[in-house]
Length: 107
Length: 122
Image (cartoon, rainbow over the protein chains, first blue to last red):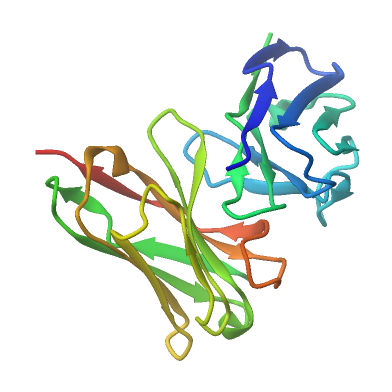
Protein backbone atom coordinates (compact mmCIF):
# COMPACT_ATOMS: atom_id res chain seq x y z
CA UNK A 1 0.00 0.00 0.00
CA UNK A 2 1.13 3.54 -0.67
CA UNK A 3 1.62 5.50 2.52
CA UNK A 4 0.47 9.10 2.47
CA UNK A 5 2.06 11.45 5.01
CA UNK A 6 0.65 14.89 5.73
CA UNK A 7 2.30 17.74 7.53
CA UNK A 8 1.66 19.42 9.76
CA UNK A 9 -0.91 17.32 11.61
CA UNK A 10 -2.44 20.54 12.90
CA UNK A 11 -1.94 24.25 12.58
CA UNK A 12 -3.34 27.43 14.02
CA UNK A 13 -4.02 30.33 11.72
CA UNK A 14 -5.97 33.55 11.55
CA UNK A 15 -8.61 34.68 9.11
CA UNK A 16 -6.83 36.10 6.08
CA UNK A 17 -3.69 34.02 6.51
CA UNK A 18 -2.15 32.01 3.71
CA UNK A 19 -2.08 28.34 4.67
CA UNK A 20 -0.08 25.54 3.06
CA UNK A 21 -0.51 21.85 3.80
CA UNK A 22 1.90 19.24 2.50
CA UNK A 23 1.21 15.65 1.47
CA UNK A 24 3.97 13.19 0.62
CA UNK A 25 3.43 9.84 -1.08
CA UNK A 26 5.55 6.79 -0.31
CA UNK A 27 6.18 6.30 -4.03
CA UNK A 28 5.58 8.30 -7.17
CA UNK A 29 1.90 8.66 -7.94
CA UNK A 30 2.06 11.10 -10.84
CA UNK A 31 -0.78 13.54 -10.25
CA UNK A 32 -3.24 10.97 -8.87
CA UNK A 33 -3.70 13.03 -5.74
CA UNK A 34 -6.96 14.36 -4.34
CA UNK A 35 -7.84 16.64 -1.45
CA UNK A 36 -10.84 16.59 0.88
CA UNK A 37 -12.18 18.94 3.51
CA UNK A 38 -14.04 17.56 6.53
CA UNK A 39 -15.83 19.47 9.25
CA UNK A 40 -16.66 17.89 12.62
CA UNK A 41 -19.51 15.41 12.42
CA UNK A 42 -19.80 15.81 8.65
CA UNK A 43 -18.82 13.77 5.63
CA UNK A 44 -15.72 14.71 3.65
CA UNK A 45 -16.08 17.10 0.75
CA UNK A 46 -14.00 16.70 -2.40
CA UNK A 47 -12.02 19.87 -3.10
CA UNK A 48 -9.31 19.10 -5.63
CA UNK A 49 -8.63 16.16 -7.95
CA UNK A 50 -5.63 15.24 -10.04
CA UNK A 51 -3.39 17.38 -7.82
CA UNK A 52 -4.59 20.73 -9.09
CA UNK A 53 -8.08 20.57 -10.60
CA UNK A 54 -10.61 22.42 -8.48
CA UNK A 55 -13.99 20.75 -8.11
CA UNK A 56 -17.01 22.73 -9.25
CA UNK A 57 -18.20 25.15 -6.57
CA UNK A 58 -14.95 25.16 -4.60
CA UNK A 59 -13.71 28.72 -3.97
CA UNK A 60 -10.70 29.84 -5.97
CA UNK A 61 -8.75 30.59 -2.79
CA UNK A 62 -8.07 26.84 -2.70
CA UNK A 63 -5.34 25.54 -4.96
CA UNK A 64 -3.29 22.40 -5.28
CA UNK A 65 0.05 21.60 -6.82
CA UNK A 66 2.67 18.92 -7.09
CA UNK A 67 3.46 15.69 -8.84
CA UNK A 68 5.39 12.53 -8.17
CA UNK A 69 5.66 12.28 -4.40
CA UNK A 70 5.23 15.83 -3.11
CA UNK A 71 2.01 17.80 -3.12
CA UNK A 72 0.61 20.92 -1.51
CA UNK A 73 -2.80 22.36 -0.76
CA UNK A 74 -2.84 26.12 -0.38
CA UNK A 75 -5.57 28.35 0.96
CA UNK A 76 -4.65 31.84 -0.17
CA UNK A 77 -6.71 33.76 2.36
CA UNK A 78 -8.24 31.69 5.13
CA UNK A 79 -11.93 32.28 5.74
CA UNK A 80 -13.96 31.37 8.84
CA UNK A 81 -15.66 28.51 7.00
CA UNK A 82 -12.29 26.96 6.11
CA UNK A 83 -11.52 25.82 9.63
CA UNK A 84 -11.68 22.05 9.16
CA UNK A 85 -9.55 18.97 8.66
CA UNK A 86 -7.96 18.45 5.27
CA UNK A 87 -6.95 15.03 3.94
CA UNK A 88 -5.08 13.95 0.86
CA UNK A 89 -5.81 10.70 -0.97
CA UNK A 90 -3.96 8.85 -3.71
CA UNK A 91 -5.94 7.19 -6.47
CA UNK A 92 -2.92 5.89 -8.39
CA UNK A 93 -3.20 2.32 -7.22
CA UNK A 94 -5.61 0.13 -5.27
CA UNK A 95 -6.08 0.37 -2.34
CA UNK A 96 -6.63 4.10 -2.36
CA UNK A 97 -5.02 5.53 0.76
CA UNK A 98 -5.51 8.71 2.71
CA UNK A 99 -3.17 10.91 4.65
CA UNK A 100 -3.72 11.26 8.36
CA UNK A 101 -5.27 14.69 8.01
CA UNK A 102 -4.32 18.26 8.88
CA UNK A 103 -6.55 20.09 11.31
CA UNK A 104 -6.73 23.82 10.65
CA UNK A 105 -7.71 25.64 13.82
CA UNK A 106 -8.43 29.24 14.69
CA UNK A 107 -5.54 31.13 16.25
CA UNK B 1 -29.87 16.63 -5.89
CA UNK B 2 -27.54 13.72 -5.25
CA UNK B 3 -28.29 11.98 -1.98
CA UNK B 4 -26.70 8.98 -0.30
CA UNK B 5 -28.31 7.75 2.90
CA UNK B 6 -26.68 5.00 4.93
CA UNK B 7 -28.45 2.80 7.44
CA UNK B 8 -27.88 -0.40 9.38
CA UNK B 9 -25.21 0.65 11.83
CA UNK B 10 -25.38 -0.04 15.53
CA UNK B 11 -23.82 -1.90 18.42
CA UNK B 12 -22.69 -5.45 17.74
CA UNK B 13 -20.60 -7.92 19.70
CA UNK B 14 -17.24 -9.14 18.46
CA UNK B 15 -17.77 -11.98 16.02
CA UNK B 16 -21.20 -10.71 15.08
CA UNK B 17 -22.60 -9.45 11.79
CA UNK B 18 -24.20 -6.30 10.45
CA UNK B 19 -25.48 -5.30 7.04
CA UNK B 20 -25.13 -1.70 6.00
CA UNK B 21 -27.29 -0.18 3.27
CA UNK B 22 -26.88 2.98 1.25
CA UNK B 23 -29.90 4.37 -0.60
CA UNK B 24 -28.98 6.53 -3.57
CA UNK B 25 -31.08 9.15 -5.32
CA UNK B 26 -30.70 12.14 -7.58
CA UNK B 27 -28.44 10.44 -10.14
CA UNK B 28 -28.31 7.38 -12.37
CA UNK B 29 -27.02 4.94 -9.77
CA UNK B 30 -26.37 2.16 -12.27
CA UNK B 31 -23.83 4.33 -14.10
CA UNK B 32 -21.56 4.96 -11.11
CA UNK B 33 -18.98 2.96 -9.26
CA UNK B 34 -19.39 3.05 -5.51
CA UNK B 35 -17.26 2.69 -2.41
CA UNK B 36 -17.41 2.26 1.33
CA UNK B 37 -15.01 4.37 3.38
CA UNK B 38 -14.76 4.29 7.16
CA UNK B 39 -13.43 6.54 9.88
CA UNK B 40 -12.62 5.26 13.35
CA UNK B 41 -13.31 7.71 16.19
CA UNK B 42 -10.77 10.50 16.11
CA UNK B 43 -8.86 8.87 13.24
CA UNK B 44 -8.34 9.40 9.55
CA UNK B 45 -10.25 8.02 6.60
CA UNK B 46 -9.80 4.41 5.51
CA UNK B 47 -11.09 3.02 2.23
CA UNK B 48 -12.94 -0.28 2.76
CA UNK B 49 -14.37 -1.57 -0.51
CA UNK B 50 -15.27 -0.73 -4.11
CA UNK B 51 -17.78 -2.08 -6.59
CA UNK B 52 -18.02 -1.25 -10.28
CA UNK B 53 -21.23 0.01 -11.83
CA UNK B 54 -22.26 -3.44 -13.02
CA UNK B 55 -20.93 -5.23 -9.96
CA UNK B 56 -18.39 -7.09 -12.05
CA UNK B 57 -15.32 -5.62 -10.37
CA UNK B 58 -14.93 -5.64 -6.60
CA UNK B 59 -12.02 -4.73 -4.36
CA UNK B 60 -11.46 -4.84 -0.61
CA UNK B 61 -8.99 -3.47 1.86
CA UNK B 62 -6.81 -6.21 3.30
CA UNK B 63 -8.18 -5.40 6.75
CA UNK B 64 -11.68 -6.57 5.76
CA UNK B 65 -11.00 -9.09 3.01
CA UNK B 66 -12.76 -12.38 3.69
CA UNK B 67 -15.06 -10.82 6.29
CA UNK B 68 -16.91 -8.06 4.42
CA UNK B 69 -18.91 -8.36 1.20
CA UNK B 70 -19.93 -5.42 -0.95
CA UNK B 71 -22.90 -5.67 -3.30
CA UNK B 72 -25.37 -3.48 -5.11
CA UNK B 73 -28.89 -3.66 -6.50
CA UNK B 74 -29.16 -1.23 -9.38
CA UNK B 75 -32.91 -1.80 -9.65
CA UNK B 76 -33.28 -0.58 -6.08
CA UNK B 77 -30.59 2.14 -6.31
CA UNK B 78 -28.91 0.61 -3.31
CA UNK B 79 -25.44 -0.31 -2.14
CA UNK B 80 -24.74 -2.81 0.63
CA UNK B 81 -21.94 -3.92 2.91
CA UNK B 82 -22.32 -7.26 4.66
CA UNK B 83 -19.98 -7.27 7.63
CA UNK B 84 -19.21 -10.60 9.29
CA UNK B 85 -16.79 -11.67 12.01
CA UNK B 86 -16.75 -8.14 13.35
CA UNK B 87 -13.81 -6.98 15.44
CA UNK B 88 -13.35 -4.10 17.84
CA UNK B 89 -11.11 -2.43 15.26
CA UNK B 90 -14.05 -2.28 12.83
CA UNK B 91 -15.64 0.35 15.07
CA UNK B 92 -16.07 3.41 12.87
CA UNK B 93 -18.44 5.64 10.99
CA UNK B 94 -19.05 4.00 7.63
CA UNK B 95 -19.68 6.21 4.62
CA UNK B 96 -20.87 5.22 1.20
CA UNK B 97 -19.24 7.36 -1.46
CA UNK B 98 -19.84 7.81 -5.15
CA UNK B 99 -16.81 7.35 -7.36
CA UNK B 100 -16.36 9.95 -10.05
CA UNK B 101 -13.68 8.28 -12.11
CA UNK B 102 -15.41 5.37 -13.91
CA UNK B 103 -12.16 3.47 -14.42
CA UNK B 104 -13.22 0.14 -12.89
CA UNK B 105 -11.05 0.56 -9.84
CA UNK B 106 -11.31 2.98 -6.91
CA UNK B 107 -10.72 6.62 -7.80
CA UNK B 108 -11.93 9.68 -5.97
CA UNK B 109 -15.20 10.31 -4.27
CA UNK B 110 -17.41 13.24 -5.08
CA UNK B 111 -20.52 12.54 -3.01
CA UNK B 112 -20.67 10.98 0.43
CA UNK B 113 -23.50 9.94 2.69
CA UNK B 114 -23.85 11.22 6.24
CA UNK B 115 -22.37 8.01 7.62
CA UNK B 116 -23.62 5.28 9.92
CA UNK B 117 -21.83 4.38 13.15
CA UNK B 118 -20.80 0.80 13.75
CA UNK B 119 -19.66 -0.04 17.25
CA UNK B 120 -18.18 -3.45 17.98
CA UNK B 121 -17.99 -4.12 21.68
CA UNK B 122 -18.97 -6.72 24.23
